[in-house]
Length: 276
Image (cartoon, rainbow, N blue to C red):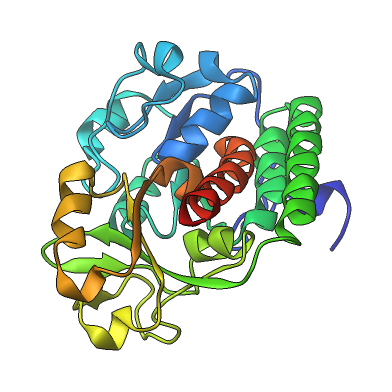
């Protein structure tokens, strides 16, 4: 299927009808909460998670319904939502099944690569009558993507270990949105092959020998400079470049991905300059 109707099919194949003007939206996905607001739909957003923190001034007034993994179903039910937006990675199947029992429309998302963003803009914009705003975001995304592709031609290929958790250490596989974002600046994540999308690892030579750079993300674990110092003191990491990276810029799809593309270019250029 192609054309406007295809734009309203979500990640699980559900075809959505255009919503009525009085639609009441709950977003259980932080990056999509921001997208909903950037599409001009903040007035219809009646619920969010505690992790939905952008745009700060707009979301302050919107009731919280727990977290992405522990949705308060009673609070959600009380909001009388007509549409709930979920994500396959961020939200639990059992919550989705429960919510389907009392919310008419579940919109399921699952962006796996940066280029999935324009379709996401068109899905949400198309359902809620914000097609023009969605196309404007698509234009911004495409311009930022083209600029990054042009800049990346001069970047040498390198390998990075991208850490998202401590105790246990966890990273991202190449089958993730984060890894595909990093690939745009010619950073390949290690390990190259792993069964899990977010594997637990040991910081040993098996993993570290493959990477010259170690990036510590600001989310979901909030790494700080103290963690950088700890790792630099480890003999196995003495020759590595270690840096903090803004996890929202690498992991958030939606409208934030536009700035994420610009950020990654600046971040890679800064690290390369520091390395001489």
